[in-house]
Figure 1 (spheres, one colour):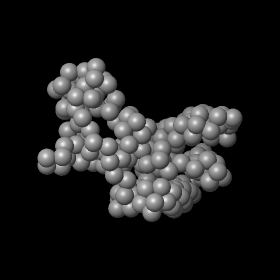
Figure 2: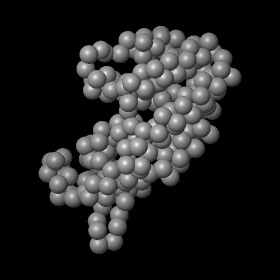
Figure 3: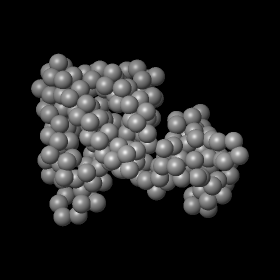
Figure 4: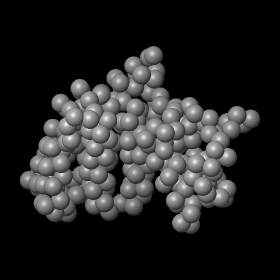
Length: 217
């Protein structure tokens, strides 16, 4: 298990990746990260190794470390995994999350901040992550939990680059509310259907946006 300094470096660098502070294809300088994080070399180097294993970094001989590109293959791998596993994970959460927690989350989805598009963008992405993390906390399979956490981190990173307020507000919010309502109803089949619909809808939106921004020019 990594020590506290390594975990702190890992979390800090991962946050930079997810929020786009370290964008796709960026060459990474270990020295620059040392200065940015004000940490010693060993925990930063170990954190880089951890994130490389999680496919956030690629290591190229004689070229160094580069932030993983956002490609169609990456998107398909992420969404294939989500389609197979997220409905099961959500069904495992049925009856395990208190109604008050779900109702509070539902209220937050229904009342995002208005006026500042960037604030709203971050709010919805963070709320999306919170819902999925809450569901994941109920999953009894530790191997699946570990892998899904990495997959969802990649998904959150991608969403920061693919987010389109005009499209996301009319699709993503109602889909999340539908998932929450299914959980409140303790309807396992409806949970499976609502999560599957959401993941497939998200896949269509994200792939379309990423194709235009990164792949298709």
